[in-house]
Image 1 (cartoon, rainbow, N blue to C red):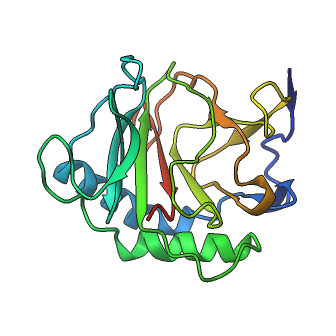
Image 2 (spheres, rainbow, N blue to C red; image 1 turned 60 degrees about the horizontal axis):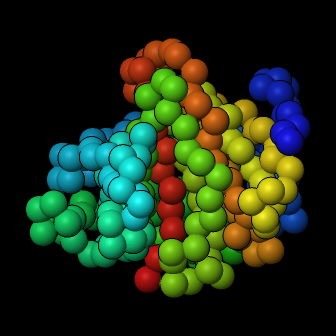
Length: 217
């Protein structure tokens, strides 16, 4: 079961609650977009986009790279964070200052503390038709720290569920520059992304880029 939660009305308020400890910050990342995209390019140059394998052996639809001291990886051994790219053995691209500053500011704006300092930023690239199934972010050692998720490029529909996989799911439209922050009692909510619609964005081309800032170690 799904419910449409928000419209893309440009007159809508900039901060929209998704839960007691979850907030959608519309357009919060817009002024940082040039620096963010530069950081994405740097991360992909150091660790090229790849479609990781799930522990069950399925190829993931999203293409992934990482920035930060730790990177999220998935293969037959499971989901985990590690300090080096398993394909090259090299460290991931360092977390750019603009990435860390945005993550800290967004967490503070959402009321989840100004002391959030991420050490990992998985970066996902969605092409039209690609989706991300409902899941929980629970591979991090520090589940008390919030998640800060930044949308760039093509619009998408964020699927915001409950604490059980079968709970009702709200459909939240996300536009270029939107940021979703969740933590506290909402930290382990199931969430995902509906299939991305066909389109082309002036800055990212035919894809959506998602940066997810986490305290993994």
